[in-house]
Image 1 (cartoon, rainbow, N blue to C red):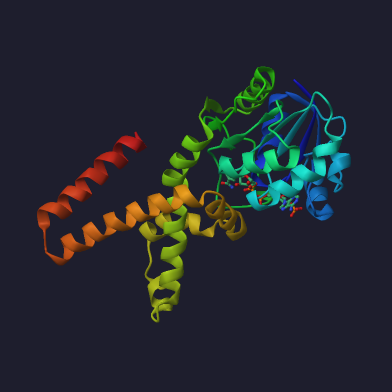
Image 2 (image 1 turned 180 degrees about the vertical axis):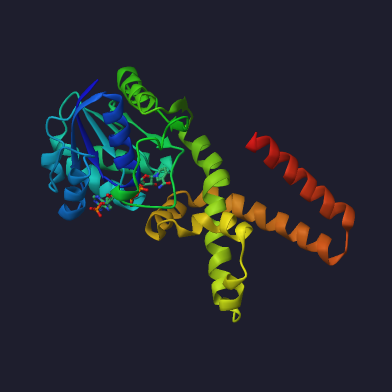
Length: 285
Ligand code: NAP
């Protein structure tokens, strides 16, 4: 049971956690904070949070648990603003999509990794943003990866684990670097492909006709290109090294496919498609 939870950034991710914990009855009071009072008032009106304070140093006072779910580029400033007001026993955790940068931000602001800091990442989301897009079932049956550090206190880790489990998530642990490599391949690369494809098509002279005749496949493949550009700018810069590696590898694989098409190499084309279909079918199962 969490007495007072402070959520910094009450958007899709923070708002959905608030809704899920409320539904589970595992939190007594939720205070929100972000830059814009109108957004926070909307979260109160929707019943997602109880109250808010745009002054972050006030919002975290008295909180047992502080959950930071702002874009990665805003994390360091948020940590700096809340650092001196955290209660001595408070647990600090976050939802950032790449963990190396968040850990570096925390180290820089606090001078070391505080024992009560538990980095985390829910592997759940949609292409929509803001508190209106949040819903209580977002995390049900979905994975949350925690990336505790050697400095992380076991009790703090257990509290964050229990919070996510109460929200319906399946929690696992991973090292920071490993997390960033895996997510570069499974999440960050697909988003780069979707953004680059749609931007490229939009610039083609037959633009109108292309989108007019686009069907279900195009819609499925490009859904994530509707994701928030600021959030994704921050993610690709925060996970730059790991992302560039998988992008280079993918470019090489695209060249192989291109060559096979150029050479009319039916066997190679079929082999690539069959391997992809088997992998996708196994994943979908
Ligand atoms: P979102 O819906 O846009 O919400 C972000 C929230 O942060 C907004 O409430 C915004 O409120 C606040 N905010 C923005 N800049 C701020 C700043 N400088 N100081 C204080 N508050 C600020 O985004 P989201 O999808 O919830 O993503 C939040 C975090 O979760 C990101 O770090 C992202 O990497 C991670 N994440 C996202 C997904 C996903 O699929 N969306 C999945 C897993 C993890 P104001 O405008 O009122 O400031």
